Figure 1 (cartoon, rainbow, N blue to C red):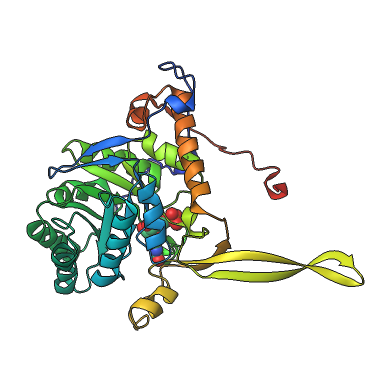
Figure 2 (cartoon, helix red, strand yellow; figure 1 turned 90 degrees about the vertical axis):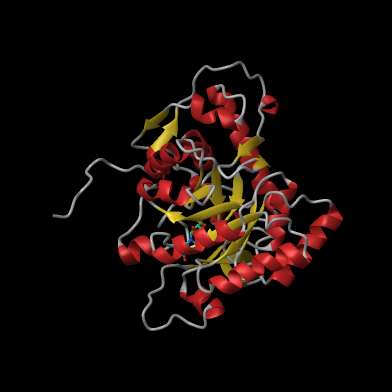
Length: 369
Ligand code: 5GP
């Protein structure tokens, strides 16, 4: 008989963090956003645990460089060649940008050439011990994903390996035999159609709780991937004990994101000299990596056995990424002061999460200027 787990699984919009007394923090400036990560397979990295998604639109060089400059973590999408990545390494080195927190993504399609790409980076571009690897599979429950992970660990024993995505705790322990970070989240992404097309997925809050508990019991780490709508959601993920948070849509409207900038003209109701005033608005293209658009661009079409599990979107242009990163660091620091946490690392120890029926007051949202 099919089993139904009847306990409600919660998402970011179902919960809030309850403010409370903690250690005395007079200012957000007193909060430490940096954290030292000691990974299961022996490596250390330092920074604020924010990643850009390893998608073609936001896993690009400009976004990655900006995140690395701000002492965060970054991925590069899997469609860059070793030579392109090598040139990026050179430019970072020239500008003094550390590559320590950079993850290069590989896919499952052709494991031999993916391993070769990592080796080329190691030998030709001095990426010592192929430092950080992200293994990307929309569905890590398939055997091929585990095979590629095992091979990557075997060939790159010194690397930090992030693997995903998964959406249940049961698989975490198995993956953590080889991986350091498990990427959690299926169906939550803003450009994702998986839940609509397959009915599969898990809400993020319950998923983070479950996976963090299991991963941390064996010194593993998790990354909450997808579904970040507001900076408060990032704070919630950290409070729920996620070590990292991965962001796509929130970065996709920025100058640094790789999607095309699209200009659109709208006729307004205002009339000057007998003609309607035209307003110009700017958008950036953002598409899911399983969208028809991405399949056409990177995989030679959809094939006749697949359906699109991603959207192609035009989202409002938001200017420089710096502005968003400032919002993120400011919001996290402020969250720490609301619950008396001295650092990001302490958020989960200090947080009480409450389940709510109504999260935000949106009454005047459409009048925002
Ligand atoms: P966002 O921050 O935009 O809410 O979510 C980003 C995440 O959505 C990515 O890191 C990835 O896990 C997921 N994602 C990206 N493209 C697709 C897609 O085409 N289909 C699905 N199901 N998920 C996607």
